Image (tube, rainbow, N blue to C red; front, side, top):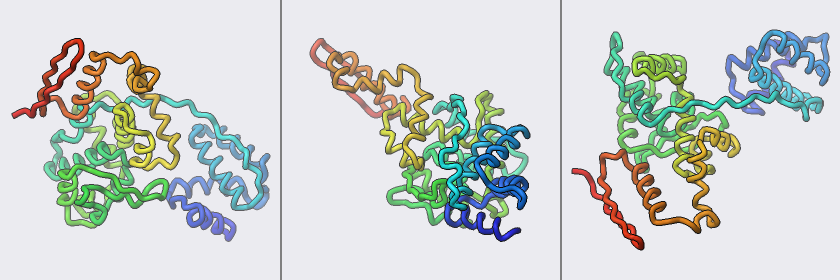
Length: 321
């Protein structure tokens, strides 16, 4: 490896704090195949490089990754060739998120594995439950260590994150106990040989579970993150709080998930505005309170009785026996 490449990689991994992943090394190989000793780095040659990659059939997302690499090289060199270089615009494709019942069915399903069925169902079930209840990235879940589990208050600490900003997220106490007792290994989620799991194995298991359950949606680990964010927004959780829970560096990243909401969801959200709330009726309040109770319970834990007259609205909520 040339001293120049060594210096650039050190800049990427140490100064810019990019992850030392095989994908980045592959990108650097493409980079140095093109920008050899005979070709200088200029705005024009960089545009030729992007055109070269485009001719090879690379996706717009991959091209944007190379533009980001080029901007980092521009900073490393101090040349200022690409400061205003634009990324390709990629149209958002609305993700079909999972319903609450689909999520529950995925982590409670008992898959008939050929061997170690009890252990594997417990292992994968807990992984799915964790990413579904916290909205964490799958790598954040698989990097979780036993020392990152806290009983008071019950929570998990994601130390290795995409943004390099650790965060602590609350979880139910029963989930904490099951994660704590899952194994005696350092990592929470490990194979039967004690090795840390990888994302491909988790996604393969998810595909299997979705197929058994007859779920036609594209089920993969990241869909639980989308589903978590979407459900929180629909239930009125403030965007800034959602961003903090899921580890978005920019609140605008969270905002884009509003595209999953339909007109009724948005109408319900804005109905609390003072100018829109002047015409609120008792019947409207009844509907909203009943919706809130339904969100807080699964419909079987409590019984709700409502009595109304033109000037009064009364609720009686009792716990089921």
